[in-house]
Amino acid sequence: MTDKEQMSLFDLTPSEAPVTELPKASVGKSPSAQKTTRSSKTAAPAVSVPVAEQFASLDALRETACNCQKCPLASTRTNVVVERGDRTAKILIIGEAPGEQEDLSGLPFVGKSGQLLDKILESVGLDTNKDVYVCNTVKCRPPNNRVPTEIETTTCKPYLLEQIRLVDPKIILLTGATSLKSILGEKLGITKVRGKWYEWEGRLVMPIFHPSYLLRNQSREQGSPKWLTWQDVKVIKAKYLEIIGTEPVVDEEF
Image 1 (cartoon, one colour):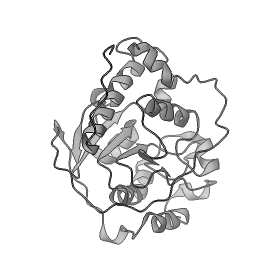
Image 2 (cartoon, rainbow, N blue to C red):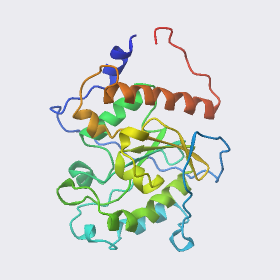
Image 3 (cartoon, rainbow, N blue to C red):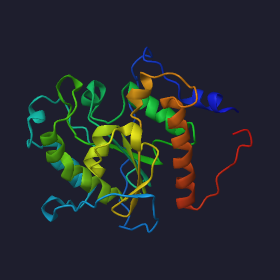
């Protein structure tokens, strides 16, 4: 199968109907904290979680977040959007903020961008119910889907940091510029840093294009956002298999 044929596995056009059946987050026990010693090409500054913001479990975090009134977004939300996926996953994906579908369902990445994210992961054999944990930089929808403000991301960041600590992933994927800035503090555009491994808090971190960007850029030509994402997701899958101790399956046509 050629690269273009393989990329068609995660095609999703902007005109596709909204999701009809929403995925459900699995509720599992968080694994014991472990540190990875793997090195990377680029180092990022460490961020410590304030002791006052620590939670005993993801259930405790969810309960507090769902009652949070710390920023103005609380007054306009329908639901607090905390998580979906496997709470023991080795891959954690961070998006920007909930959109309309997410606000209505209470689950992250379930609109068109979420459907495309699932297809991207499935194209390399990653199951969104058991291989990944998905969350957002902020837990409430900004009005009119605008970009979250610095105050909003800063206020919500303790929840995000706690999700990372409690899930204890080995790989973190940052989708888009907002999550990139929140975790790594990078001021460069996503096009400059996507596909690069960073080390952050003993974990491997890679910025990738947000699925909504791919929805606006449908080309599969070499060098296009979709083609670059296909290269990134293959690297991510290979690193995932390395971490879990499984040899990747090599397709001679690639």
